[in-house]
Amino acid sequence: MTGALVLEDGTVFPGEPLGACGTAGGEVVFNTGMTGYGEILTDPSYCGQIVTLTYPLVGNYGVSGSDLQSARPLVSGLVVHEACFAPSHREACWSLDDFLRSHGVVGLQGVDTRALVRHLRRHGTMRGVITSRVAGDGSHGWAEELVQAARAVSLRGVVYRATCSRPYHLSGRGPRLVVVDLGVKAGILQALLRRGCSITVVPATSTAAEIMSFRPRGVVLSNGPGDPGDATWAIAAARELLGRVPMLGICLGHQIMALAAGARTFRLKYGHRGANHPVHDLTLGRVFITSQNHGYAVADEGLPAGVTVTARNLNDGTVEGLEFPERQAFSVQYHPEAGPGPGDTGYLFDRFLTLVAGRDGRAGAYGQGHGSAHHNEERRAG
Image: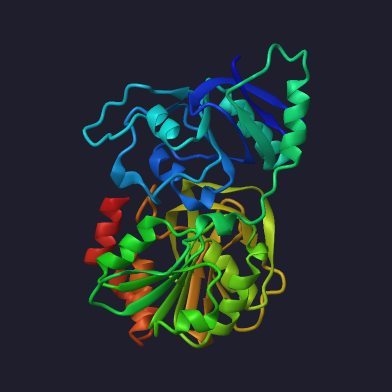
């Protein structure tokens, strides 16, 4: 053993170095996707987290530039069972090891990820420290030191690390939208650009007045990391914006909109992270397989009047969608842009743009979403 993952409860999972050498702390989570590690590593929603992949062999197709969901990975670390150091794919730009090393991400391979995931499922998500440098054979108390370091890991302020520093524009000929960057994935922006939208991306701390100064016809609250209750500034802005302009919330944005309307959120035992989560769309009466990445959910109890649950997770019954019919807004807990995962729910972008255009956001967009060119494009992208 030359490396290890040490959890705050004192459990040690030995492994071998992968990627950059060093030590890093974070929240230890797991993702059940069979592919998509390039997108997972660069998804800003994983900011401050040590990600464990349940699929045993990782890296055989390398990392491609088209996989990237942000300019650089914000994960604190990566844990896999077996890493492939010689990828075989025509689009591969880096091996997994080279990609992690070039961005300073500490990784481990050779870990018993099955035992680790079972531990997290049994005891819940917890903080940990990943290190490629194990001191000696344990006689010098290195594990105890790392346990204390794990318990000191702070999970606050991750949205500040994931958001952009200043507004920027992406040109299109369609309606002008503002995307509030809580840790936005490139896939969300690309899905809107493919639909012709003109986009202004603003920092997570933008006020309602600053957002409206761009004269948007719609506002999107993006995905992002951390506890939604910590993003008090985003909640305040959403509270002012609801009812003034059509809004779409995705993942963290969904939770922010719920809190702004007076709902409550709670922490899940070990979160939803993967590309195979079944969601029942109560409006359509259909089940979709979705891509998800979140550790919190909106509570059923105390939902304010005028807020309707539109979708539920079929694994645990948690809220997956909300509608604010009197405020021209709706939100989903899952990722309609996928990346990685199925593109079955890309029609939600069409629904939102129908709402922006001033037509009935339910019947019109749902009717044209399935089988539309955009929907098919999302499926190919997924």
